[in-house]
Length: 184
Image (tube, rainbow, N blue to C red; front, side, top):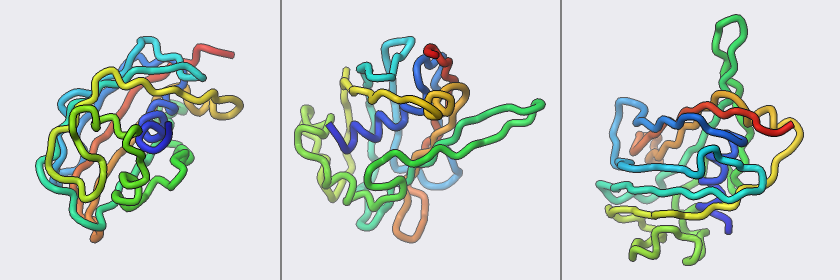
């Protein structure tokens, strides 16, 4: 599967093999048209290198997403040198980019790739105000190697933001956690 599964996988790829804690919170002081009530990943520990993970999501979109809105994903590895935190930008691994018009992204999903379709939720644009629920969504994680192994271990920070075409915030979530490298 691609599309939405790839984005979910991308968020998880940053954490490599074992996530000891994930924290999701709203970011920015601007508008928030999306409320994430539940987001869970299992098993714990997560073995991402070529293994399946299970994700459950319960979210409420309070307003329609306007035409031309953008979805932006940024990720960083957080390191500490002499007690100072350093944020190293992660490369974008999403095939269509990490700053994409939301309809281009959602319309690229096949019906069987929309994890919310089982509940009668439509993933096609325009995205209307609605509840998004997916329980026990299985995502296959790609194998990673080389520098990606190092980059994916340790602390991470991912920011997922939706903005209008004029860059006005519609929703922003910050996802932080700690990953422990389990393989050599």
